[in-house]
Image (cartoon, rainbow, N blue to C red; front, side):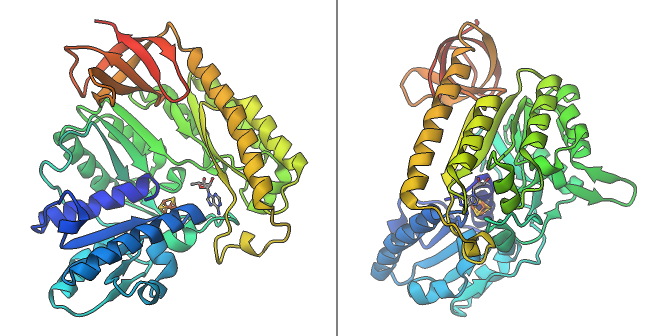
Length: 430
Ligand code: 5AD
Ligand code: SF4
């Protein structure tokens, strides 16, 4: 129910279960084990998790042998409290406990009662290869680091994912090779802050650009991506990677959160509006066509109309390809939760509307500018509309097109005929 890291963790658990004799079922009514992988970043995914858990609890009432577990960031945040609120729940497992899943499963077998596992000290585990698990997928993910040391004042992540820890390069390379052998063509490297990747080996110190470089050489890897980067740690070396690593896609997701220096300071982001704009300039100098996407929040405590105008101004200046935008949401235990000047929900909603309308105009304008261009598309599968294929450009835009003899998993040139807000439509260059 959360970010790409949350998806990645779900894949970890599913592979683990398949390797241990479980098989997926089509409906939760037929399941022996249900794990709900939750997100805690805002109130909305939290509510979604509770309502889903409520539905799964009623299935369990009719099937007492069913094991019901909540995993992920919300499980970490709430811990044993969840067992009181949801008596049907058997397992509460935080995201840093996945490496103990074997033990947890053995506990279930021994019927040793309910389990709450919420330590934050374990290193992220290596998924065991699970033959055929990724078949039909063209794109895959690898977590290269986990946790966060930044403590932005609004953010729950450092509390639920623990301190930053990087995975060893040989594990990451082995995981990438396994994905490629399963037919994956594009890999996205994941981390709460990938720029902080650091591995100090016996002979070599690995920073993130070095890791990217090594991975990019793997045979059969058509495309490499990464997310998320923190503006505070975006080095010139990493910016240059967009020039010299040929299969690194020209797309960066660089959350800016707010356009006012006063708010950025309250958020403890560690950069100014001017510094952020400087980074955008550097990225566009290296590659003028680079796609830039971002996250932004409205209604942070104390945000005035003037601060909000500065956020809109930054959006107009940068012209992001797309934006994820959110209303600030109090997270218990963060320092923003204790701040004065909380913004009324109605004001937040109206600011969000204004911001999203502005971004829609910009996204459409940028997409329209691609009409008539030939772009390389990695074909990922059939589109929801019958008879069409779908894929993405290197800049991560969805392209739908008609073709009878195009292979899924290969790169093709497509002429863009029409652009919409969320996708492009084109014709294959045969
Ligand atoms: N309220 C609203 N949005 C938040 N995000 C993180 N914490 C909060 C919060 N408390 C947003 C940020 C972040 C994205 C993953 O979620 O924009 O980049
Ligand atoms: Fe991902 Fe953060 Fe949500 Fe956890 S809280 S699932 S790390 S977005």
